[in-house]
Image 1 (cartoon, rainbow over the protein chains, first blue to last red):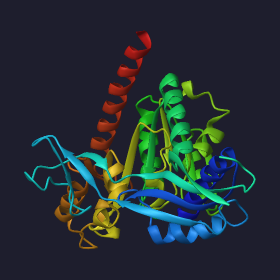
Image 2: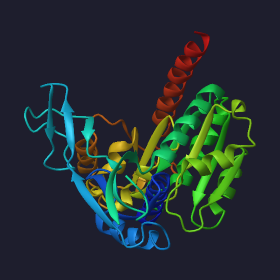
Image 3: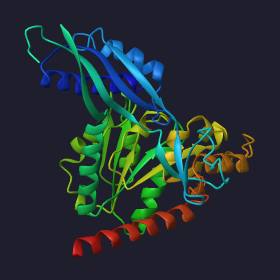
Length: 121
Length: 230
C-alpha cells in the first residue's frame, strides 16, 4: 500500500504549484492514471483525503482520468489498446508486444485554484 | 473569489525518477552494475543473493549489497556473512525502497571498488514496481511455493523486470508446481523475458544464472568503457 506515499508526493507538487500561482486554495486536481501504473485508484483517493489535511488542498477533489494500456506492435507497426493487462499480444496480428506507449501514467495535468479576492487578474 | 485553471503536467514520481537517473549515471561512472531484486516476501531473495554473491566472489568479482526490510537486520546479517560490504535499510513500515534511500546509503561507499551492487528490495510485488532505483537490471523472483499464477496477478512488476527467476525449483514436485504454466504466464505479461529456474539451496540451475549475469556485466562494462573513451 504505497498510495498514501504517492498521495503525499502528489499533494507536495500541487501545493507548491498553488503557492507559486499565489492561490488561496485548491478546488480540484486533475490526474492521469494509467491502468498499468501499479496504483489502486480507490486507495489513492482515500490517501488523498488524508494527505491534503492542513494544506492548501484540504477539501479539494481529486479527479482521476483512467488511461488504458496502449502498446505499439513492431510487426504490424500499429498502436492498439490491449484488452487485458495479462496478455501482451497484439490484438491485430497476434504477435507478442513489448513496447508500452500509454498506461503507466501517474501525472498531474492541471488544477483549479481559487485566487485571493483582492487579486486582480 | 474566482477560480482559475492551472496547467501543470508533472509526473507525481518525477522527483524519484530524476534522482534515479542521477544514480544511474553515478553507477555507470563508477562501473558498478546495479541490480534491483524484487519478489513477494519469502520468495528467496536473500538465499539467492547469498549464493550468487559467493559464486561471483569465487570468479573474482567484487560485490556490495543494500538490503531493504520493514524491520529487523536479519537479512543484512546473513548477507554480511558472505564477506562483502552490506548495509541494511530499515524502512520502518514503508513498503518499498526509493531512490533517495539508495543515495543516502551509498553516500560513504567508494562505488568504483565494486563490480556489482545488489539491492534487495522490500518483499512486495506491487509498490516497488513504481520506483526506479537507478538499477541496470531489475530481477523478479517467483518461488514454486507461491503458485504459477503470480505473473497474472501482478503484471506491472513482472512486465517492468528484465529477468525472471523461478526459485525453490527443488520443491516444484512436492508442491505440484506447474512449470510450463508459470513460464507461459511470465511470457504472457512479458514476452521474451529471460527465465531461470534455480534452487540456491540445492545448487540447481545456479551456473546458468551466473553465466548470464557475468555475460550481461561484461557487455555492460564494455559499453560503459567505450562510452567513457569517446
